[in-house]
Image (tube, rainbow, N blue to C red; front, top):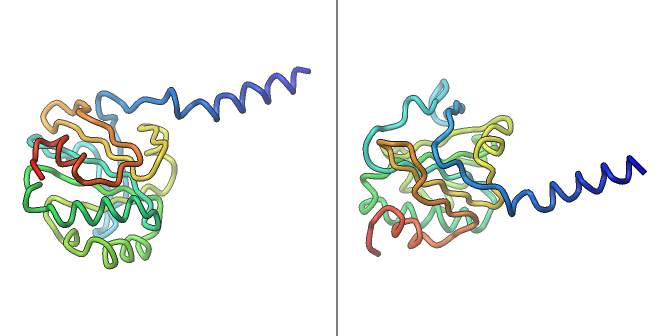
Length: 164
């Protein structure tokens, strides 16, 4: 009976956890590997002005591809936004994502691609869908908006005060 109760509570937690999970109101500290540079990138290196967008994505996800393409098409409007694309996939998949859907993102000063080789992002931010975008004020590191599973770039543009 104890085992049955434990299984019930464990299943209930995993089924309903996404409903209760909330994006962190203040950006937690993190360190990820850089995809296109040797070394690590930590939250200490984030800019102090503008907006910060953490985009947790999967290179094979159609919604992620659409959002990435939308960001690439609107880079001129998004100069005051620093983008951090974070994936748990290897560089070869990130290359495919960029080359097929968002070529304009490669080598841009306000765009970085980071690799989470574990589960750090999931544990600290609690995403429940791909893509999961966290939009923070760079000065205060406070959450302005969380877009979970959104593929329309217009929602992102609205969140950072840019008109379509």
